[in-house]
Length: 362
Ligand code: PEP
Ligand code: MN
Picture 1: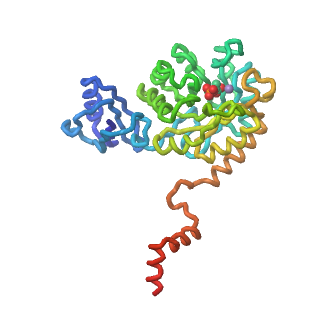
Picture 2 (picture 1 turned 180 degrees about the vertical axis):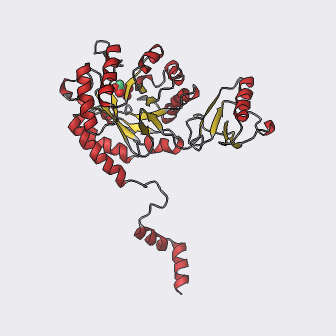
Picture 3 (picture 1 turned 90 degrees about the vertical axis):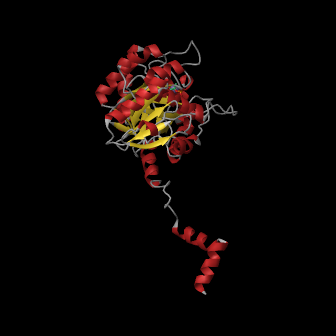
């Protein structure tokens, strides 16, 4: 159940709910509700009315299986990474190479993507590669290179963590922990990052349903880390012409059912450099809170994913046109976003409205 408590509720209300849940063996987790109050998700049913607690605003016994991630739980979440807000209205641009290749290269690309409009730097130090013989990433040396690039540019950084045992190490160097597509259902890893306070970028498993994706977010939130950003990165479809197919349906669809921000990765989502810019625009048009794009100074010689990596110049174009696109679509979801002439025409073409209109004229 979801229990919302008012900002002015006595602290004893929260304590009593958590204690009652503990007593019954129900997992319970509190988080801010975005309106100054708190919401407590309890994995079970408590007799809240009989507990006579002050400051309870709302009790929802029926909710989605992804209780804490559901839109019913709280206002839209804004996740802060360094000084960058994700979900706050302006799209974020996360850019950088697939893998970190050296300290100098990472600093060079960090400078370039910053000039191109990126506000968060990416780069993998621990890489989940399809082949054990492919470059596996620089490991700790890569993390140091990433931190050096952050130092030089001031950009917050995101990098992937693949094992529960690595979480402390990686968290020591990064502003955001990335969970890769192949690990979306690695529950021990999700539980472990759930106990961290570092924001998490959760990429969708390429064969995961929307609900499975949100249940993985729920795992992280149930552990206490509510700073989760989702990332659509393409699913496996039937057409061998594409490495993956970007499933943009989930962007507006997830916004209907969850308060979590969601970004789009058109690099892995297409697997083809020439498709990235258009699909980046499509992602923003679908309502994404940002983009994650693989960018390298010399994509043809990148140690991984070069075929889907673009240059900083192309990234600058995506940023400039993307910002303009988001501006043009501002207010698109508002109910009063009507085209006046059409609204007028529709009003008098429905039979009932036409009858009313004729009576008025007569
Ligand atoms: C990546 O972002 O470099 C990556 C490996 O992505 P994914 O987990 O989506 O394949
Ligand atoms: Mn990659």
